Length: 114
Image 1 (tube, rainbow, N blue to C red):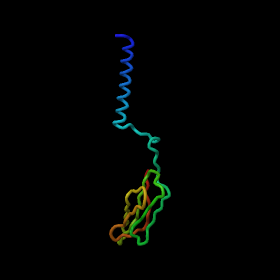
Image 2 (image 1 turned 45 degrees about the horizontal axis):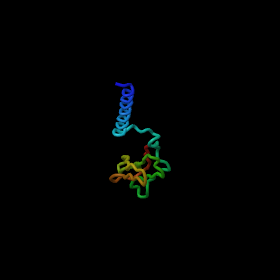
Image 3 (image 1 turned 60 degrees about the vertical axis):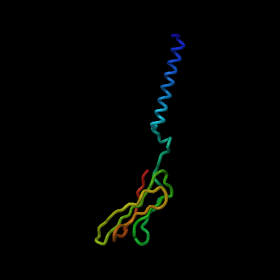
Image 4 (image 1 turned 135 degrees about the horizontal axis):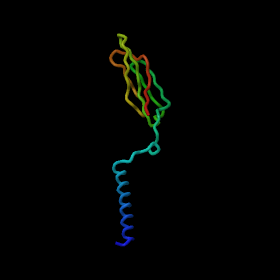
């Protein structure tokens, strides 16, 4: 076998190996870095309150920044027992947390996550 033929085969095998490795990375998903997908942060510009009627609590954030938020409400029933309830996680709009049974809201808050 000629020397030039051996070199060509070696180069072809290496090229094939690189091609297979890159197709594996594409088909099985290569890990993404924070710079590729963008870093997430906690929501900002948040507001929460107990609305009139004391039926629960509401929360909203102006910007989600890639994170999410939910309303938290502290409630007290007629026997004086305290309870805490949470609303659904949101990226926009109002999150509502409702007091259960005969309980009334005594305080509100917000949970955020990146």
